[in-house]
Image (cartoon, rainbow, N blue to C red):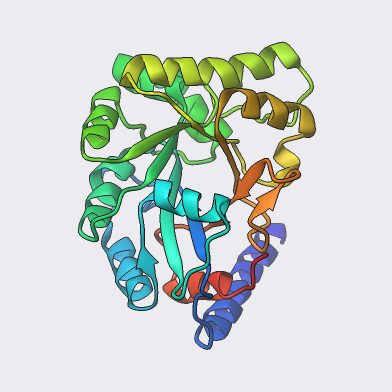
Length: 267
């Protein structure tokens, strides 16, 4: 009964968003979108065609920019005449390499991939136990696979950026200082050791404001120049201006849903 209710609720919500999105267009602000993958449960047959169509429709009404430019605009409170979008993706899934990056390259823009170093390590060492725990228990994405470090380095050479997402997709709504320092601070060290460039960006896992706290945000700000959520998109900043808020989307969402969410006013 509960499953049937949730399925019906999902269908009705999708219908409402599609209807309302038919009458909405993105508002003229700088928007940083945050997704994960082109397909939630499949990898080998992941199809980027839906993302291609989504990008095509968004580009009719929006300018696409590099992530670092969008961050600068938001931090400097710059105004834009047309809706302006930059893209970020969390967790470091393989279809970020095979599907998402190539699609964005056709528009001449990069993305920021927030990665978990131990997940990429598991790809290199073929640690099936770690990957299964990460995909089944942590992110509820069975059947997915991570990017390898070689794939990450290839994207870096092509102009894509990489940020930190804790070592193990750890929820930082915690007061264990030692573990927070390890997951947040050592994550930066691990990425810099692999990529050879400073890691200045951090997005906390799960992304909602309640998935962090003032203690963990202060630790993140100690190690990183920019800290991101995936919540409260109506406001550019949260946690007293310490955190930049992104708008959640997914490459497989209907574009009308994205139109609806990007139509809200921001402050």
